[in-house]
Image (cartoon, rainbow, N blue to C red; front, side, top):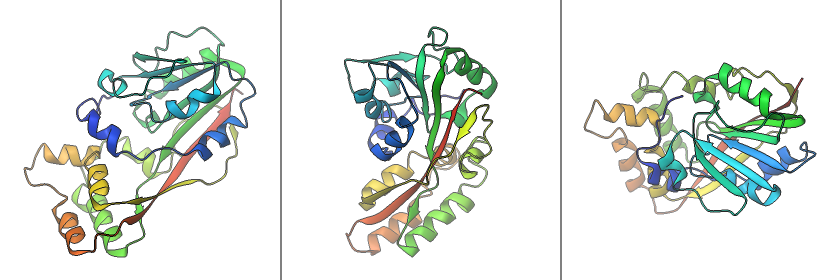
Length: 244
């Protein structure tokens, strides 16, 4: 598993989209017991905090201690820095395992072996993520598309392909549970949008080779436009399953 987010963990915490309660509600309707949840790849606790009110105990793990240090405190949440396949949990002890915007970085075989070991017979596994940002404004949308598919082509990690395929191509050794289509919708300022784009791993890889930011075109476009907020949408990626 790669640690690509320890550096700039403050920005990641501030700029990444927040998950909705609709996602959690969709998952929880299939979880019969609420004793223990494991949020793996928890980062700064964005998904953990939505789970906290629903479980007696939560273990939130991440490879990056810097990311976990940004997470909010909850009395029933324990944070632990470790690799995904090394939870330290007891066999058949977990009611829900979640991975939010992180599973594409994992060693699938090793991680799924751990999931099958610690998940209860009636437990649920959920892989959650969000796809490429969509903007209603046609000019801004086109500029982001050029940035993503042209300027940053060759700078994305290979694992990004799982996001592009909406998580449909990740290995999924579970009995699949059908879920509805969901999305995240926001009204963002130009500053918020640029902050988010600066968290892209492809952009960070680009800046290791070039000093000029690939966001200049987009910055100039946003400066020419009015100060009104931009309507933003992220398609939600959700694979939900239970033990076969």
